[in-house]
Length: 158
Image (tube, rainbow, N blue to C red; front, side):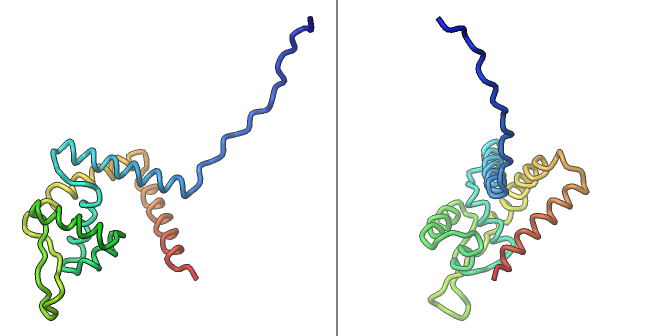
């Protein structure tokens, strides 16, 4: 019988640092989850995609469905389905374009403006504030600056 030898010690390698892409994707996924959980806690029937549509509608005002779809990065079919849901909820309406009778404009209703101002914005702001609670004011400003610079660099690609 051979004597038992202790296992050879293999130096442990440090775990690789998460990539920027992984971190950004994971942060986004957690923000989506947290915002939807905040809506659920407030008994608000709104998905994250619908939240984005309300946000962009508030920012852009009356726009075409195509312009709105581009702003929230949805294809035409998905946008139509979301607009149908939001219209049924009374948050937006499709109105005829003033110069082109074939075209429609998408705009928030009074209920949509109220939903955005009193609920959706408040919920998302609470999540964003909580997400940054471990950062001081300087670090929050730096993070914003870094992310804005990365975004601008990506948009200015050759």
